[in-house]
Length: 504
Image 1 (cartoon, rainbow, N blue to C red):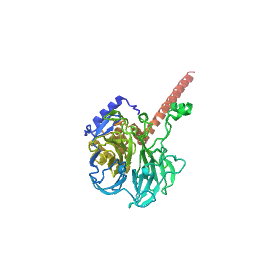
Image 2: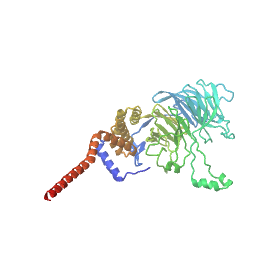
Image 3: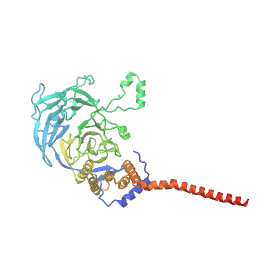
Image 4: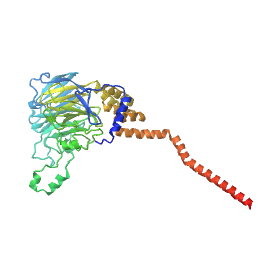
């Protein structure tokens, strides 16, 4: 991260903040935090509250959850893959803080093979009501209707690009509006396995770029066959999870990243793939999209954040789930960290082994495999105001968005994105001079440059007549003065010549 401004500039900006910004509430150290421009942790009012934790007892299950691995939310329904018990739990949310057990799915009707599950790890539900289940140890992806009738299954690809010596072990799945299935399978690092709606294997999508250093590359070229066999191969990394957003783009995440690559910014644990498999995630934030930007050891935890699952809201805010320290990291559509919260522990809002996250509206649910529980989070006033400001800006309501960001600032004067949000709303309202002040306060160089460019253009347009007159004066006055001097010189010269002639 380039920090080209000097400390003197920073002190001047801070002084300007003190003079220009009204007194606001500053958050104390707590559950929710963010990073400022300098990379310092800034604690904030909570953006989400943990309103309820649902265990097997609260869900009234006859058998306790056992190592659940997958969760999917469809309308008001919540589906949980109770992997250790080889079943699917279907729940429904009937009120703000309750989940009701609808049914336990441990078998289905029809088909020619086994009609029970063997280690189901994920589930997805289409808009037409069909359920897709990753039945991992049976080596298939099942498609069932809502009455649990067998429709079809997606099996091991017979294509030569799939190693036929490997078992087909689907781990995570998602489906698009056309009924195509995208699958992450164990030991497959070529990207997402793609099946057409009729079950035909159609290739791989979104393989991660291969990275290596030249030293290792040259050494492999010079090494013997035996030596090469013991070296690490340059192969794409395997994804951990995926989520298809409301626009049909697929978010993917991977925990197969190194500390060195994360620190250097060469690793992208979160990607957003288009239909061609290209990463189109916008990364305009001050920090890499990697979760915590600092990490160490302590309390039995060490190393960087490892994003094991992800979900994306309708307003393009996406939330990554860190399996190391049980934290949730929310980013906006520009890749700027909105806030982080959560942790490891036994209290509400903390986790032991978080494995899945999904959303219902703006509410979040997190599945804990070790605690065998579902935690429900709902936005606070602070969180709702942030969402409101973002959504208003997306709809073109720039004045209203600026007002909402002002309310966010009133709740937390340390929140850098509120200043940037007000500046962006002013920029869209063509109030460039005012926007410059907000961008300068929070050292937002990119947006400051955009605003200054428009401000300069507008100033020139407003003063074009004065500029033109000044230019003409600068150009013509010296010429006029020179012409006058020349005429005067000719007159003076002529008078002397005439005087001399009369004397003769």
